[in-house]
Length: 159
Length: 159
Length: 159
Image (cartoon, rainbow over all chains, first blue to last red; front, side, top):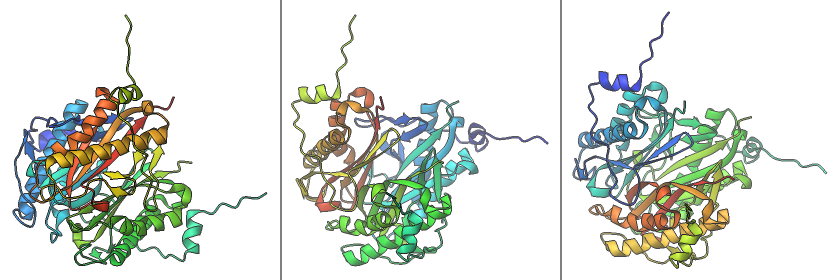
């Protein structure tokens, strides 16, 4: 019996996903820092370049569907930055933590549905075995008016 | 001279605390990820099952006392999940970080009093020697309308 | 050829910065926890002692300039606490993560400008080579009414 294991890069290609350019900082920080085998990514917004691709607050300007698009856009930026930092997505052995911060009204309660659009993309690319723990918060506002910001801590293969 | 050191499981029993069932994810994530000797728990809410045990915003619907009950409920979920993940609470050597996210109005200032209900329970169970660093924020809203969400990073005994 | 490398303590002295007393906890937590070579600091506010040095919400009570003063004050507390924990700022090999949490209105978008005041101070003291990844969120409110809270994870030299 032959086991064919698929890599993250192969899954990305199969999904037909074309990654954007990796976001660059707009401030006195760097895109990511690795310590030991943990890579801490800076917060990724729903941006294209230094502009918000989608702006607004969930429960006021945006519905869950628009929020999910923003989360997906931010997750593409996570993938693009990870690839730029590590050379290949195949070097990620685990998504340790995914933080999903959603600009939302006090009455909004459906943050997990918004967050799932990011979680599902990362799962589809990195694989079921690497699925993250997750922290989801509704925040007052985010840089550039982005409705979603993602925080990722990745475990990196060192060999 | 004989030193009798008490374990977390013994302290839990002595406090008469009966842990709830560990929360299960409601989305595309896992309850916890361990990397090296660090265990990252997913955000724990003031839930019983997939329903908020307490809902509302501090400074609007809820006072500090109700917020403390929510923080205590979420901390019970932290303990239940930790026990399920590790088999025994005795395997926790340190609570490295406790994040306490409180749904609050812009005018609310007493977040630390709310957070202490969670910190005190974890201290009483894991012991004075393992007390965490802490991050406390007032957020706009939380999944399911929970007034409190807890984030925990635990250091695990590897022997 | 002689390379003269400057240390963090030397840069601090050269900048003429006098550090305040390190903040002490106002709750059931400790100022910092080290696990392996990572030091997790508790959230640092724009406080002097147990009182907010500056209070208010960005986009309502405070403008970007006042927000930057708050971020700078909180960053001084990060430095003071780090020095107290490690004995010398020279033991920091990297600022792995800087979280900047800004109390802000839903309409506020200039969080990065506020955050930069903290990032720039840490860069000026710890050096260009140690600049952090960064997470910036606009939150509803913060303990004591502080407009800014900082979260830092530092990599520590073990030799």
